[in-house]
Length: 452
Image (cartoon, rainbow, N blue to C red; front, side, top):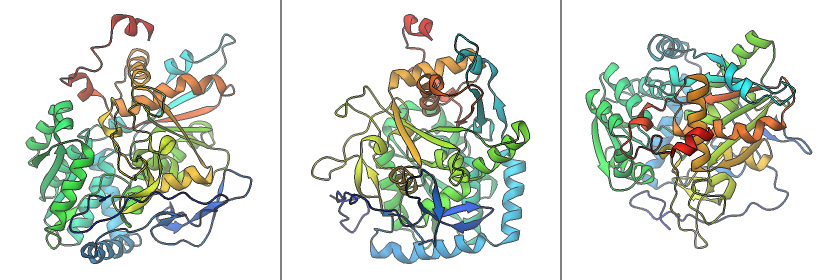
């Protein structure tokens, strides 16, 4: 089938990794250093090995039409150059501090912690990485502002991007206003209906918003087509760690500040690293932002939660690429994706629009196959319950995407030892979800609310 790049047919071939295959490489980042990891026999920890740019074991790559090869190579060269550019790093650090509001707090959720104590008063200690407190209300700004600086460095004055729940779009519009860049944002009609207030904010911030029939998947495809038509004059701000190299590595790099801050804050608060990291997974960038710093820490569990949709049956509508997908090529890279027996992309479904995407990060795909990443699902209803629970117990309104991670605490906490340190990536605020015309939260039955 076509993989949504125009002017060329890219097969979304199903490919099963042979049994016993050892993933070859994984680029990592500690203080802007580029290294890699490979699976260690009989261990969940991955070890350093010589990196292969753009590849995470068998995943990743650059499956794109010829017209995109040169622009992607130019982007890779510019990205590699800023990794050692002290002036760029200083400018970015100042913007993250003064404009984005980093570092974000690592908050000890006392009431949530007490909620999960057993009859003996024992249970894990739960902390929230408060990305919802950053400018724009989500973790998205850290990546967008870095790419905007990169676009200006490359001499571009216009940017194109795509958004789903709207957080990335709002971040892009805000940053483009700050740096005087023309901004065009593609968004699916389904997501416009879900998040009209986000669209209003994008327009208020000066962005041109273009509606695309469908959801985020359709918006990404249309924005890519538009970019290809204007390669010489437009920069594409990628909001997710999917797509052809160098996009997954670059986006993960800019989000990795989340995990770096978490390590520093954990050392300050309890003198060690977390025992468990927990994050929702759509395309995977917020999870990677938290996880990546800790890949080499054998004692730290990394758990990603995908949208289980309406039920737990494989045939039910869901958005669980890692848990229920198969390996194939999508949007220019090898990854786990949701497809039928003929390799055709299948419909995704989630109460959280930001989780509705058929593919996932090639790096997370590798981490799953290497055994380093644990992957599970929660249903729409469980996520809604998790949303209400955090509101009632901590006075924090999380995004519906984030609520999937909070919902999994119900299953996770009873299995943990007393005093175990759990860090949940609170990746965004859920104010939009309350105001949605679909009224997902407030339409819960009274019995459901009382049960929370």
